[in-house]
Every structure is written in structure tokens, then in C-alpha cells.
Amino acid sequence: MKRKKTLFLLISAVLVCSAATLLSCHDDDPEPNVRRSRHTIFMYIAAENTLGSYFRSDSLEIANALKLLPDTVQVALFFDNTYSSKLYYGLSKHEMMPVKTYDHNVCSTDSAEMEAVLTDVFRFFPAEHYGIVFWSHASGWVPSSYKKVRRRTFGIDNGQRSSQTDEGPQMEITTLANVLAHHPHTDYLFFDACFMQCIEVAYQLRHVTDCVIGSPAEQPADGAPYTQMLPELAVGNIDNALRIYYDYYVSGPGNRYGGSIISAIRTDKLEALAAATKPLVQALFAERTEVKTGDVQYFYPVIDSDVFTQYFDMVNLFYRRCPDDVFEAWRKTFDEAVTSQYISRYWPSAARSWLQEVRDPAHCGGVSIFVPSEFYEDLGWNAVFHTYDWYVDAGFNTTKW
Image 1 (cartoon, helix red, strand yellow):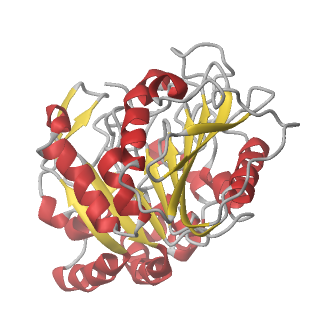
Image 2 (image 1 turned 135 degrees about the vertical axis):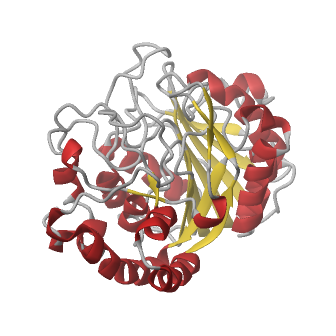
């Protein structure tokens, strides 16, 4: 099982287009006619990596979703793989059609390149509301370029070397937040990618979106069931969209994978959550205390990995380590921020090639948290943690970590 997504860009082979529409526009061609809609769903597909072939099925799902979308909704899709970089456009009950072929190999994880693509999207497809789907490999918040760290944050762009390699630049979450800050605020950011539902990620993105959707764990490369999900996202039914995702992997066609974990975070409630978390952090981590985590639910099964942290469930950490009354008061604030939590008993792990178990779903929240450790010191992860807003606002900066 490949870790989460990237695209196979032959959408034209999947979506039936006329010979005329298959002629893509170049940068010096006339711009497409803009159409203002109520809602634009923008899908950013960073597929220049080992996930490239997995978008073929997703493109069919997106084509079918167009038949179900309200007339007030439009879909824009940027697809970058080892062959080309293109921008597509779809309307309700119409086919997806190419709008622009970029005249160079776009590096989908470069901030300037992403900036340019977003500028095109917001110019070509204006709307009252926007939502963005980020589709690729991903792994939370630790920069891939730091010391020995080999993990990725969002995306991999291998420079068109091969669809079978995951070598190439990735994008840090602090960079992603800065890029998005230059563009219209979004209703939601949906990471169809592994490990992205970290509190550190959501908190860093709190000023650019109303809602962050994702999983704290590994996700199958098959990705989201877009035919059913996109119509729900288009009208703001976030909880319904997450229920569809969950059911697909628990009792639907994706149940061969064994389950899934997904949640949604309201960003307007995150600063209250940070304030509620701060006294717990100060009590548990004071004077550089190394908090015990042996009984805490994790979402990456390889202990002492120098590639990934263990992605400890935030709720389970405080449930295990805090007095009951303290935990219950804190949990209310958490539930106000994390409005949808779908947690199956098992989830699939490529790291171990078998199902992993959620031991106590009732005391898990579907959002991970970084637990600093001396083990991470040489890897540089504790130091990088200092650059995130969560480190300060949740009180870690007062603990000598």
C-alpha cells in the first residue's frame, strides 16, 4: 500500500473531451472566460512521485461528481506529474476540460510556483467561497531538509525523474501557511494525504481557513471517494463528507484496507484550545520532563523511528497523563474545536504491512500532537518545533523543551 496520494495526470484519457478541448492553453494564450460561482473547489494534485498512477481512479470519481454538483459550484484542478503540469476546469453536468498547460515543469512544492498556480485559480475561477483539496504524499510538520530528517511535510516533486521515486523537494507547513496567506480565505483545507491532522499543522493554518480536514494516520493511496464527498463539501456539509470517507473504508468498497481515521478542526476555536492546553503542558512537561507515552495511542507504529514521529493522539495523551477532572474540562474545549471525529477500530499501516489497532477509541480524538523527547534532539525535531506557533501558544516554550 502506497502512502497517500498523487496524480496520474492523464485526465484527458479518463474524462471524455473533444479534440478541440484537448488543445491546452499556454501562458501566452488568451485567458479563459471567468465565471463567478458561489463555491470553487480547487484540487491541488502534487503527483510527481510514486503516487502518480493512483489518480486515474480519482479522476473518474471527480468526473462523476460533476454530475452531482449544484449549478453554483465549479471545480478547478491543478495536476502536476512526471509528464506535464496542467490546470483543468469543470462545471456541474459538464466534462472536465483543460484550461492551461504550463510552459515549464512546475515544481508543485516550490512556494513561488504554488503562488503562481493559486493566482491563476483565483483569477480564472472567482467565487464567494473557496475550498482546497491538497492531494499528495505528506507527513505532518517536521521539515524534510533538517539534519538527518528524511520525512516529508506536504508533497514531493521529483523533477520528472520517474514516477517510481520519492526524491525531491517538499513543502514545509510554515511555508504553505505563508503562501495561502496571500490569497482569499478558504472555507476548508482538506488534506487527502497521510499524517496531516496534527495540532501543529492546523494551528499554523488557523488564519487562512475556517476548517482543516485530514487524518493523523497513514491513509490508503486510493484516497477519498470524491464522487460522494465533493457534493457534500460544495454545500458545506463537512460532517457528512467525513462520514462518507469513514464509511467508505469501514463498510464500503475500501473496507479491504480495514478502516480509517479522519477529523475536522474549526480554526476559530484553536486559540481557545491552545489556552486550555497550556496549563496541562506546563504541568506535564515542566523542567524538560520526558513524558511517558508507552500507553498512549499512536498513529505511526515504529517506535524510535528517525523518519517519523509517533503521532500520539492528543486526547489520549491528556487522558492518560492528567487527573480526571482536569481532562474532562479540557476535553470539552477540544470537542468544540474538533467538531467531527471518525475513528475506526483499525487503520492500515504501510510501515508494518498490517492493520494497527486503536485501543480505546472513546478516549481518542483523531488529532495528533508532538511529544518532545531527548531521542529527537539529535534529529533536530525539538528545535524545529520551536518555529511553530503551537510551541509558544500551548506553553511548550515555558518548559525548557
